[in-house]
Image (cartoon, rainbow, N blue to C red; front, side, top):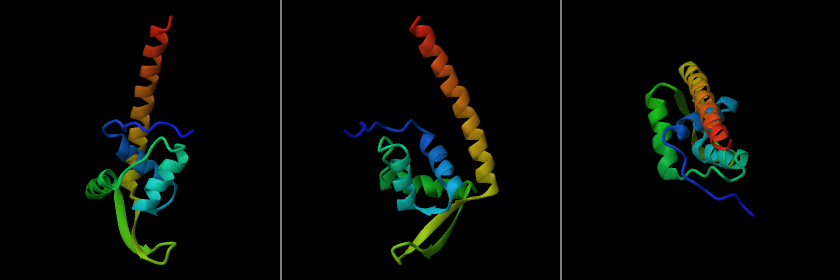
Length: 112
């Protein structure tokens, strides 16, 4: 039985995209597929959220994009991290670790 879908918290999509692209460059569809695959179908991103996020990250200088031939033989825009994007991913991971650690403490305190 597939895991239920739920909305991704505000700001989390950018961090997830940066993480996926830290592994290897990818086109939009490939990013969405990889997110779904790694999360065991919990994270499913629609095009209406993904492409504006990619554009926003590119405008911030965290991604670069270039047109290349995809695995299907069609031209696709492939995204990759810039140095600034790698630095931002490190900041995002650190912030996420602090927040998730704090939430864990709160949950543990509530179960005593």
